[in-house]
Length: 131
Image (cartoon, rainbow, N blue to C red):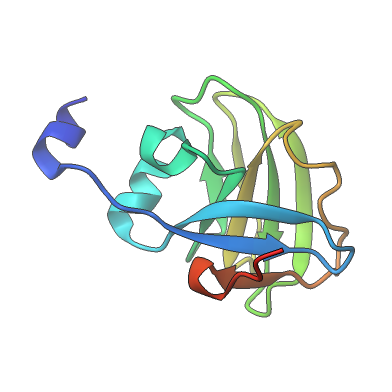
C-alpha cells in the first residue's frame, strides 16, 4: 500500500478492556490520526489482539475490510451507548455523542461483550494483573 510505504509502520499500544461482567479483550489503541486512518484493517492493529479502541470516534466504516466486526460506541466515561453487532464490509455507523469506538472481531469475544449502559475499564498493558 502506498500509504504504508510513505508513512512507515505504526506502533500500536495494547490495553485490556474489561466489562463489568468480567469479559476481557486485548485491544490496540488508535489515538492518533494515522492509527485511526489505518484502523482495524491494518495488520499491525489486528495482529495478536481481539480488537481496536478508537479515540476520538463517533463514527466508523468498514470500507476495505473483509471480515465482520462487533462495534460498541462509548461515551466519555466509557459507558456503552450503542452496540452494533456483525457490521459487515462496506458499511458505516455514526452515533451522536460517542467519544470512543470499540471494534471487536465478530465471534472472537462472547457477544454481547457489554450491555447498553455498562461501564468498561481500560488498563494499559503495563498494569495488567498476571494470573
